[in-house]
Image (cartoon, rainbow, N blue to C red; front, side, top):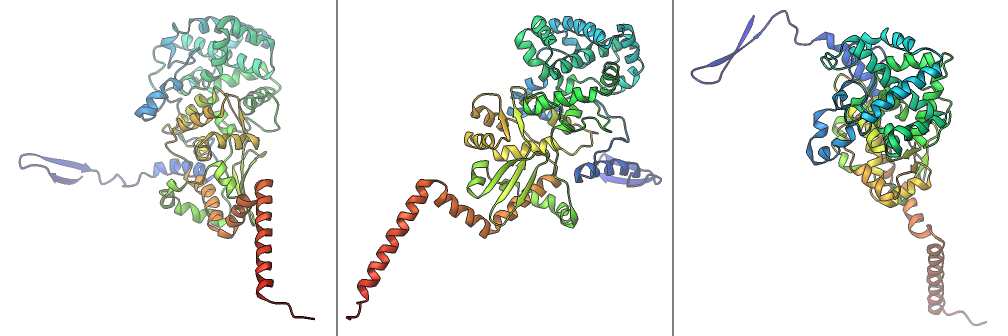
Length: 462
């Protein structure tokens, strides 16, 4: 052993023993580092995780401060408790607990299988499901009790998703047992971080209900309902080769795509990110300010965030997204999921929200995004949208992706000949009246010049 002695006072001291056979660098962690690196640089999110991940609870730091305390309610269930974390509060959600028995029966009828078979199918993965929760959080339940909880809660979630995806009349059951207000809050509750069911359980029941892979179509339609406010099927895989931990994580991966690093320039930028990012107080301007500089917003139908610089103008492409009464809850919980430990991810939602917070400063910015069909406002007045984005904290972003996007706008803005042209057209040709006024002023100036010229220069006599 190597002893390092640090004198603290004359009477006592501290000895730290470091074994010689322990390397300074723990090479076992290199796999973890590479996992994070792949996520942050856009190479890909790992599906073969090197360690067991858990359905985490909301990081305590997100609940601190004035804004954190104000947002606390957005992490807690309003109508239904799912999983073990809020199970002790089930008495408060007695109506939902009763309704779970109805949805269990309905889901069993739709599969054409007895409930006993559903129970046995879930029981085959119950140990994997138990490991998805934080150690000790399921100890109060034996396998039978835990299996019943998983079966009831999973059938509740899948029945709701199917009814929404098919615009099924069975949705009326929600109003019957939970009321209209309760129905309006189901969506928010099934996307709470602490209200998640392991996807391994959902997958078993989904395949039992849709053995011909139509379960992919159900999730596709439901996620598009969340993204656009409309139920339709999009030609895009929801699952693919993904191995999500839970439904919230799956939706997060479908929600947005970040720009992909390309060429040597991207690699060079990544090395400068930490230094440059300290200057983030110089974010890009809001939507209306960018428009005045001839940087226009356009919907991105490939679902990717991008900036393109042209000769005299720039284009920011953003995915179309609906803003509803549930958006703030879902955004906050996706961000909370990204902030959890042992969870390699690309911070895609946090980065998207940071960009939107920069673009939306006042109601005129919301109006501009609505006019460009980028923002679909279902919450009412535009001021509510401004308030929503203002109240969402984004503790961290994907530095690489955010810098790549921000740097493109910054370089375009620093090319003065590009912004001058935009400002000239905005100031003098943005409306017919400005154009007429400019032409009239030009005509008057030209007439005055000609009069002065001919008055000063006498024409020769013929």
